Image 1 (cartoon, protein in one colour):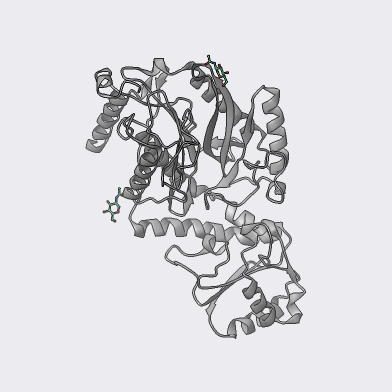
Image 2 (cartoon, protein in one colour):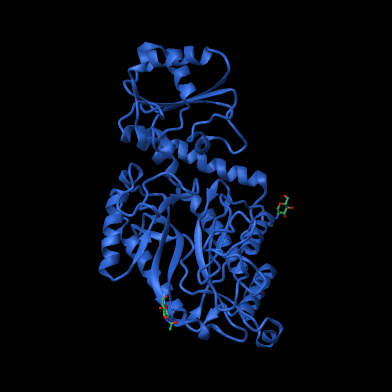
Length: 453
Ligand SMILES: *[C@@H]1O[C@H](CO)[C@@H](O)[C@H](O)[C@H]1NC(C)=O
Ligand SMILES: *[C@@H]1O[C@H](CO)[C@@H](O)[C@H](O)[C@H]1NC(C)=O
């Protein structure tokens, strides 16, 4: 009871301070979700891995393969190794060789540095007589191309001619094993997503941004430190951009991002529309989120946000729905891309679509729906079928002319979705941004800043 009362008080306190309850009704305020102890985390992750391993024989049958052989050495691991290892394993050891068999289902692991593993494998093959043995030798897809060239030579030599004729390539095997997000992962994925939203909300607030002083890079590094303080990590440097920023190309910063036109080398100012691309990593999962914020002038409230900016966000929200509706299971990413772009243009929207699987990796296994430089067709990856029971990042932008700034702005958003078998649709993992985050300054602070701000 006591805990509950404290939490309620906090929530009301936060809502009162930052005005997170809108006129339309209570809006949820994302909260930081702290991680369990490392020991508990390992238990949770191993539970998920166990469920994933159980899927493998069924997938071998689905793709008509009798056995799947993966072999690697310490620090030269197959990409799939990371999805199957125990939580306390930091790398493969010696030569780590894994064999999965479809029927009757079986799995075998050797950790060895002698030739015994090959003798054991030959004996096993002689007994089970697999007609097709899949190897991860794809030349384009990372998740089915993780067999190192030298290791392939070792396999060929170790197994001999009798078995090399059984070797096949089935790209969907590695892809589907890595892509499949067992249901028990979702609870933590939602918590991680909420944490990502909470960090962004904190970063894009007057707590962190001081208009006229804070630069994009100050905010990015604040986000990095904040993630670290929570014992989470990230899979890419957070990006913070000023979408209304002039400043390019007159940039003289020695910062490596100093020539990025989206992050001009000047402080964030009143009236700026700002954008972040942000992901957190924990428990072997990764999130990917892009949100927008607006810096109010001193004394302004949400009523004062330029209407053009609100309309831009609405437009990109509509584009999110178009993509989500077109994401039909079993259809290729390229077909979905074409249909979604056609509908986008029919509805009078200009923009770009570049969605990718996420979860196990930031850019995870599965088909992609466009890439920022490929809006007609994505070779190889775009031709894979869309799988269910996985997570996707709906990543895109819609262009919108903002009359108040006399400029066309790319309203970019990114939100993660998961496949919900009950509703047979893609659902937001935490939600999607429908209101701009606001950076507020009390009216009396106006006199303190330089006049041009
Ligand atoms: C981060 O980990 C440290 C060391 O285990 C722990 O003391 C601290 O409470 C953790 N912080 C959070 C926010 O979970
Ligand atoms: C708006 O921008 C265009 C081109 O960028 C310029 O020609 C025009 O004068 C601007 N209009 C106003 C009202 O500033």
